Length: 179
Image (cartoon, rainbow, N blue to C red):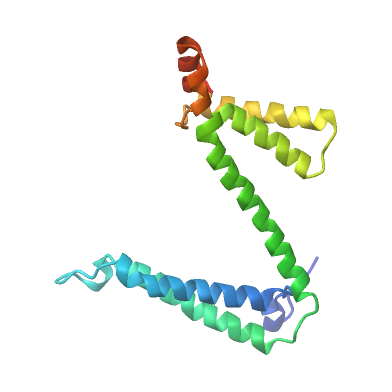
């Protein structure tokens, strides 16, 4: 069991090799938000400060900028850690999955929720290295289960696919409602 002996032990933190890059990115993101605040919020005359529509967004973003500056200073004052670029490469590789999600979002209105979900669960399972027939069938079954739970049971509104227009009217209505 790890015991904290001093305040220094309490505030000691493990630093990742990409800490400096993350700190700089976070500060830049915060500054962009701060730059866009005037166009997104309004200050209303004859209103108390804490009731202003713009007060809390300004307070939150200014706090983000302040702590972003502190994070950058902390990262710059700390000794350099080896492997910064390796850590950055891991972050860049994770963006691939945002691309897969965007492709899925663009596919659903064309193919429909059921075919798109099954297709992408199988593709992503294959992409992750699970290439046996058993795993691919399990992925397809999982995709079907997701559709049944969300669209059929929970009645989540998902746009129908353009491909459903090719079905006979009775089947199209059924597919649009439940799949």
